[in-house]
Length: 361
Length: 95
Image 1 (cartoon, chains in turn cyan, red):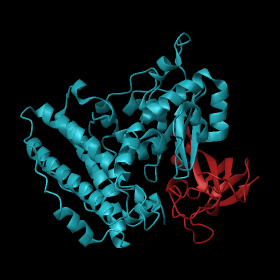
Image 2 (image 1 turned 60 degrees about the vertical axis):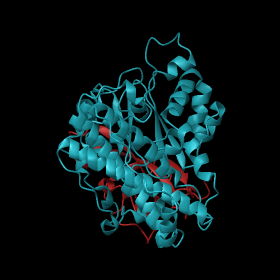
Image 3 (image 1 turned 180 degrees about the vertical axis):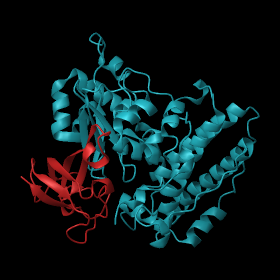
Image 4 (image 1 turned 120 degrees about the vertical axis):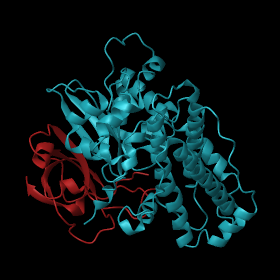
């Protein structure tokens, strides 16, 4: 039977996670170092296993990136060395969060087209074992004591950085990828992000014609805002009203309009979120996201597929009549774009979310 | 790319059951497991979505279905599940 692949229990997912990809690390206070490190581990392992190594294995298996090409590329660049870690624990963790952000961008840059073949996302899903557990890549183990754990994270980070750099070099040197393609892709990836969604929502609030076109004509409409629309299937639009509250999930993997909005919030990929929100949306929103939806309001949970990826238009908060479109966009959060928070409302703290997910991941 | 080319066997308003296996061997290997055997209503019909960045061969025509969550998870579930399911996983339940 298909579909069993989503029951992959990532036990390291249930913790706090403050490394929102766009928040300047200097502005955070790490109240819970253990939870922050657990969140880094969760993301690092997800992107390493499911995006980086699975893709390289696909290219290896098909002969697009042979071992020898990779080894030669590794030999022609100096082996990286770990920088001296910061002595302050908070600084050391924040440095890891910054490195993780850069690493994730590098990993995603490896999705540039190669000369020999067209590789679709589905190819990577097969390669990483979404449909067959035997293909799953082993997880690294991380020791419990915090400092030892951090040291292993730093090593895995370094190894993955080296692998990304080597793969990029190998693909360029073998002629599979044009020399500037990775830099161009990284620039493009940096321009993506949930703030595109905030601008789309703010325009929809002030311009009913735009909202109508967005709902009926789809993603091409965002060109009106000079936002590149992406082309990953259909962009589903779910509009919240006083009678309906929409939430988005992808129970089968982690489909999200990432070609428009960048990466989803960290918990979006956790089994805890997927399993609970689809079966008990009202309880989940209240317990994990501090969001009580009144009994008279219907909750609609949209389960994304690769062909239809959903975006929530949250309700415009009351009392915002005088605000400009730019000011309205400031009220939109990544959480409100998937329906786990209202616009204009501070989203639940990551520790609260983690508590709500605990015990079910 | 999202050109819609082929319409499927069902139309908006049809009440359909999600099959426990597809009607024929399919290149699309998945449908949400919780929906298998359950009855939902077609609220949108997309036809075939051409989406080569995600998968090389187009999948069968796609629909958005609406399910009463209580029917699947029991009375404590007070929400509606909106899920996309492809044509080969569906059969007509009533009209």
